[in-house]
Image: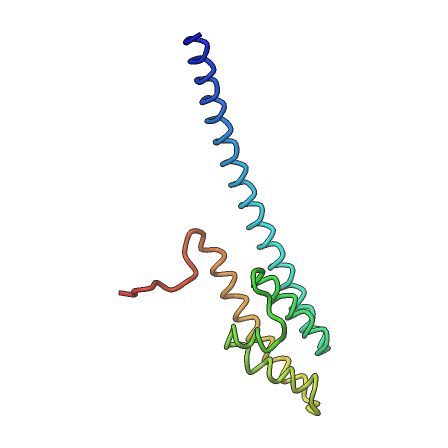
Length: 145
């Protein structure tokens, strides 16, 4: 009986070890798939925002920027353009100009849209630079030298 229980115990430990490795590989695969899907969604949202800027329609630009913000901040998506401006100060002035075009009497939409488009391109280029640095943290160090 002792040999029987020892055999069952060894078989259980072997099965536990094999399942543990399989689960770790599945979790890693799912995480990589999630990251890849997020990068794809961000690329697509950036392309759609650039198309919206080229169209010149402020309503389409607003919708595209909100979708882009949702792709960038999946955990806490912005509820409006103002929140995007708060999170990215580089876009704040351009977003304020866009809001004036959308909700005010400002009819000079070409110049304000062009400025916002240039600022957006700068931010999206920074985003691409961060995505290319694999393994590099995006946050600044807590105690810089």
